Length: 365
Image 1 (spheres, rainbow, N blue to C red):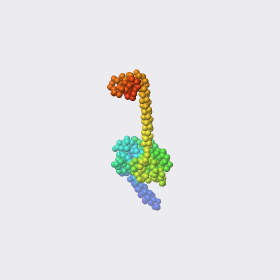
Image 2 (cartoon, helix red, strand yellow; image 1 turned 90 degrees about the horizontal axis):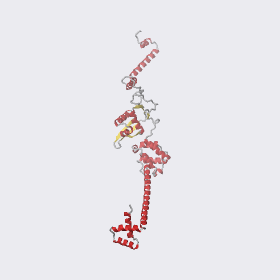
Image 3 (cartoon, helix red, strand yellow; image 1 turned 45 degrees about the vertical axis):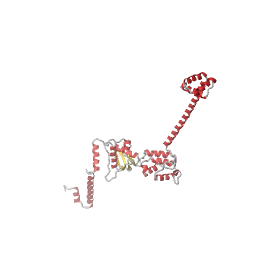
Image 4 (cartoon, rainbow, N blue to C red; image 1 turned 135 degrees about the horizontal axis):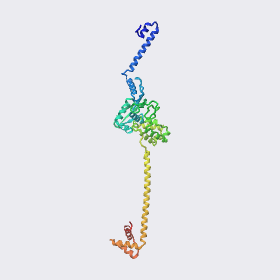
């Protein structure tokens, strides 16, 4: 029986059911081997990626530990390069859904438009984000993040060590799972601060989570979420909300359904109130200065009158002014007043006015 295979030997020597079991087991092993050969063939993209990872590890460029899932397994996590991570983080910081344009991203991240476009295309291809049609009126696009994926970043150019699931490096992990990632955008920080500082809304049990639901529900709030804070301020000065048939929150929600509240009469924003108070204070100080200037002017006028009267007590001073007056053209009435003074020593109103004018023009600087 030399030269025969093990299977042939088993077939020839089989005299009971045990040989059949052995043959069945051999066929199963052959079938599994053929399947493994297909899974590791060059036609399998995952096999190629795995081989590339092995080649890089052996080339001295650093190890990349990537465990690829089977082709039938749904991918729920992915890796981003640094620039892609910056763009993705920008979307995270502005909410799981909202509006954007590339100019805003460039302003906040410093990344140029072509790179931003490529990064967004990459995020779309990884099913991390969904982008809707461009709105030419607002010049923005709506986006929606996929919150069911975990995102990891590659250090450097992507040839280094991939950050592990547990790592918390500065370049490291961004987990979009709602239970492990808490979104706190600039708007919701303002909103939370406002609700906490508002005795009225805090007493109604209003939360920032409820406000976020309103922002997502109404289009006019999606485009301008901070307008919700304005609406909450209006509501605090609106009779229908302050004296509701049900609850203030219920009435306010109904107002949002109708497009929002109009500005109440005599309502002031904090900045407007601060500006008004500042202007009132400036007006008050201006009025005080005007009163002080009037008092000073009155004191000056009084001092001038007293000085002139004191000047007239000396007849030599009067004669000095009369000499100057007579040298110039004078009316007949003024000449009569001068003759009366020289005869009786009395100063009538006409002469008094002439002396006063000459006193101011010649003696007062």
